[in-house]
Length: 194
Image (cartoon, rainbow, N blue to C red; front, side, top):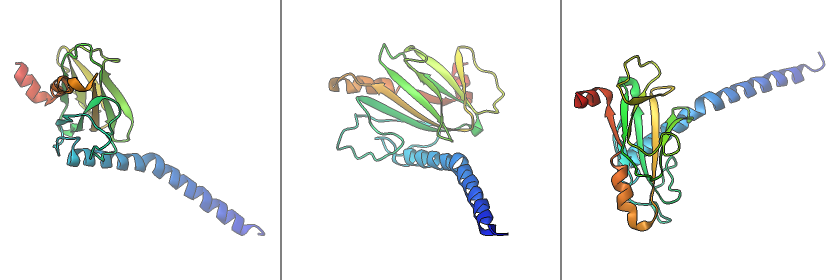
């Protein structure tokens, strides 16, 4: 066989491309997500470290001299950031959002593959107060009345929220709205509602 080495090279090349593509598609995104989640929880976004299933809100605008080096949450424009890392394996969480009074805000939901799977905010759900049940893919409970369900493709979720600051003098107004965005386990939320 004259081209025996060419055939072996072709087989090795195809296997390498196949394995590389598999790793790129299925293995790299969870590594990136885990890096973001760990960095957000360990460094916070201005208020220091925070635990899983809680939110951390930045008390001031990011500036050019900001010491925040978090790759998952970079300051862009006049916005205050809120971040959280959810583990839905123990049950759903309720995200409660206050009435924003016409102020632009959004909350992005990112799964462990790095894909955005839902938004809550002025453009998608309006600026009025609301409650959103964030559940994992296998949750089988009953959604409380008046609550909108958001189903995550898996049990790990990164939340990144932004609230617009219209000018430098109203940072405290935007911050007071931002800290009213709350996460509560469904079991505690139902107990408080009863």
